[in-house]
Image (cartoon, rainbow, N blue to C red; front, side, top):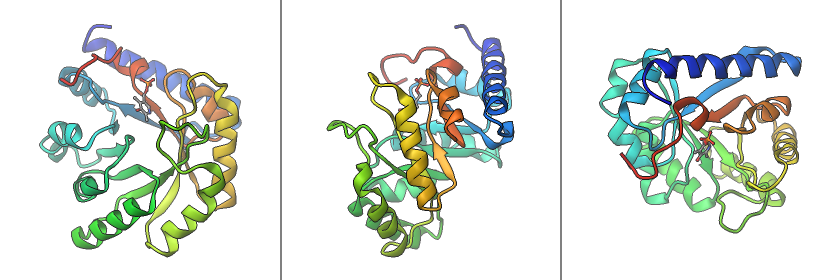
Length: 228
Ligand SMILES: *Cc1c(COP(=O)(O)O)cnc(C)c1O
């Protein structure tokens, strides 16, 4: 895909598919937010996405996100930045300072670090808990059986503003059962936000209740293999 005019068209097409999937599920299209996953994308594509009106962006790494957004964000009061990659405890302060939402909280040590950073900086991003629905060894996230207890601890022990859950289903499995499981855990814990669905499966995720879909390559084109 070439830039930048195709970016606006790609965004319009994805928004159209989101609206269609929402309508088909009997949901309002506005109940689904498009998170544009800008990780590893060249700046000209990100600029084109901003020019097209996109304001919600997802980034995988704190450092890359700082490089891209610290200066840019001043120009956009309505920008919303979401951390969707794993977070190390020693980067908690930097993440709290930059992001509006942190989607990948998954362990007590990180909960403690985030609570401390929020206290110190006087700024509290929304926090989602990542659930490793496929129980994959290489993937971050709390396993489903421990999710209820972890959500409770995050709220009560650490006082964190937990608003929802996030998952990344295994690549080689039908995603629907993972989306259904995440929705079930969220419902029984009174959590309204569900970040699930990527380029290949966001319509299925919407059918199962996704409130935020994380779309990268289908919006921006394929990612370069190395950091810009
Ligand atoms: C990269 C990434 C995405 C976007 O993936 P695409 O397949 O390019 O849409 C979504 N979520 C997470 C957590 C990611 O790391």
